[in-house]
Image (cartoon, rainbow over all chains, first blue to last red; front, side):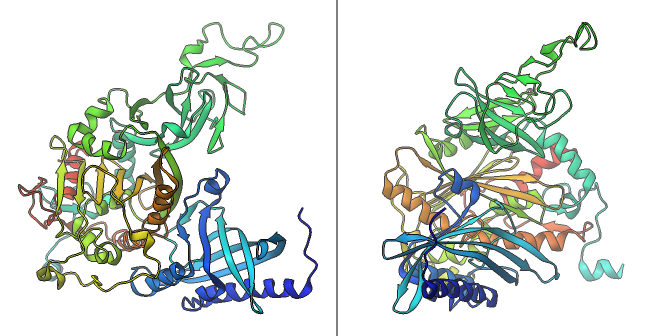
Length: 161
Length: 421
């Protein structure tokens, strides 16, 4: 097990990044979502089955903050989909190691979605393998790899996690 | 009477086809349980071929991968001779699934329940306590090992693409799809060693046939998909082609060549076209020429449930498995070649953003198919009108795409094999 980074201020900043990011997802605030990432960030959504076989391809592969803004804009203006609410629950946030210019971090999540019929159902659950850097006083993701367990996903995944 | 006058159409009873052609599709084909059972028997376990995987997924003797045919789990197994066998994943003893992992290596194959043991070709090798113990119990003298193997499927292999059918009376795979379809399929399955880049799976609330219709439908493609048409990846007015397997009308292929210039007379018909749509990071819509021809999209449907697609440099197999009449699974297998350089591999990953469960194009399809599922399920007496471009199932003489004839082709064949003709 990696040593816990004993820095209360850093731990607070990382926890707060994850919490703020999760609330933004729950709010469906697509304009704000890219603000949690650095300009040259890497963002990947990939199933656990692919991840464990070292298969690189996943549903989302973005290599810049610009690509995240593109995705947010497409969800708002281009895609056709049924309205839904997403509830993103994050937990077990840990700083697991020192990395170049920042820290490697991990978390667990579950995400539920609610359609117009009213039932809230599990959309995805899994883990994230991330890298956090400090931009001035603010923690941001320079890498976020979302690995979801349920490789058969209900419907389409419209909102990013 | 009033109802008929108001709607123009009267309800169609289950089992009745509304017209003597495929320009109408009764909506009960999407929801009726008895019809679904008949599909499993005649289509999924009948003389039709299914996609299993690619040979490089099981490189070594004893490697296996689970796949699905209809509702049945099957195993793609590489044997000691290097051949690939496809075996029903159900023990000949009591029906138990013999392999549970998605991928694995076993030699021999041993059922976990009572350890019936099979070789990699599915032949029963041994059973514990065959003669009982101390002369007590065991199997009868007439128990014949050769009669208790795993059920074997008939296998086809086109340049590493593995196909199978439960029906050994089915024609060979190459004959089943025919030379025209084989020619297009071999653009992707071209003899170079394939590499699987990843899988995506999703569950959609609709009938499995709707997905095949969606892929056979150029009408929606040019109207629904902002990304396809705005970046010139596919538009119905582009130079392209449309071919069918003429014997059955059931397999078809559409092709299109990239062109960002829009015919102004068509622009007003395509409300979703955003000619000024710009991306901050456009790398996912930048193609490179990879194939000898100039086709930017090839989308091929093979009856019953397979889509072979090249979308610029993104190569995919889409495979539809039914989960009852009202739901299906869509499995995406993304392919590249073992000799791809790093740049090409990266390009394929980027372009994959357009398709799959989060795809800029495919989300539209998944969602609209669920809208279709929701609208169709409670209305089994309704009928779909499929007469854009005529009522026959043929490819137009000019090979243009302003037609729903590929859908009519699917249902011309479907009616025949399902006994509704």
